[in-house]
Image 1 (cartoon, rainbow over the protein chains, first blue to last red):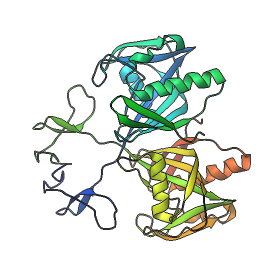
Image 2: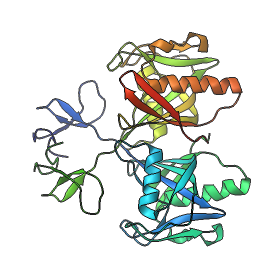
Image 3: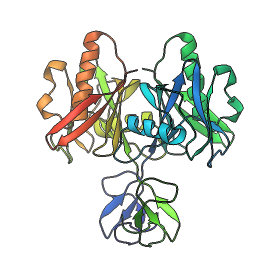
Image 4: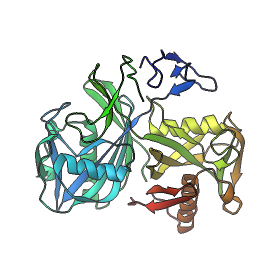
Amino acid sequence: MKYCSFCRAELHYEIPDDDNRHRYVCRSCDIVHYQNPRVVTGCLPIWQDKVLLCKRAISPRHGYWTLPAGFMELGETSFEGALRETMEEANARVEIDRLFAVFNLPHVDQVYMMFQSRLMDLDFFPGVESQEVELFSESDIPWDKLAFSTIRHTLRLFFQDREAGSYKLHTGDVIKHDDTNYQFVPGPES
Amino acid sequence: MKYCSFCRAELHYEIPDDDNRHRYVCRSCDIVHYQNPRVVTGCLPIWQDKVLLCKRAISPRHGYWTLPAGFMELGETSFEGALRETMEEANARVEIDRLFAVFNLPHVDQVYMMFQSRLMDLDFFPGVESQEVELFSESDIPWDKLAFSTIRHTLRLFFQDREAGSYKLHTGDVIKHDDTNYQFVPGPES
């Protein structure tokens, strides 16, 4: 960020009065251009004993499997965003049962919210961002072909809860140590 | 948003290829300037049968009572943000017990996350954004002097759960009908 998006003036990266961290400040408009984490919202769509996954047709992680999810948009709720992403990526209709996972990913400035949901019918098919959409039993999950560590942890915790016979909200942080080493730190549970 | 913050070129408000909604696009940099909702994170600090509230020393809602909360910052987790805001606004040390509330506020593009927490000691005092910090019993809560509807719903649900003897995650949407009419629509519970 170099220039003010309102007036084109050069921005100053400085600590504003009454603040305690560096921000991009336009001295001409006298405004601060704040930057904040974004919310990724999506679904864990269930049909009987199976979970719906999408094979990504776009980068990053082209060709790897994921749950339908994406950035929450202006003007929508996290529920609406989760349903929208599930429709866009898998043309799948679901009903949301519960908020299942809230993970922080501070290395990419994201908060990931995943909703456990029931698939309403089997008329799903790949959206433009997916190559394939398929239902997987626990034993068939392509664990070594999952796109993101958040997806692995969500699925792992889901099957763990299902085995225990009781679902709950899971919170936690995904901490990046290096490109191949991501640590999952569980947070408080509800 | 009128100009590209990277190159100063005029932005075009248009639907990019492979997208389905209007975005601010820089044709010169060939990038999209996405805008997304922000996360407000905070604490519901408890001491015995009392809740800590802060009287706001800043606008909006100057002079009204609130729970310590604020915008999540880049590079931090929602837990860290909740602890930071509690320290900044009330100089209060807490331990987080659970994620208690996740509310969508689509009219202001916010997701509100509130953590139930235990106050560690009574050495709290107002930060620069607070006039007063005080512990309130349920019967003393200044219901008509609360700063935001999210705070009212969080406190109402907390006392309801406490009465029932069991705490859980609450989700929901705060929908604005007009300046004085906000509707709370409960979402799925965990």
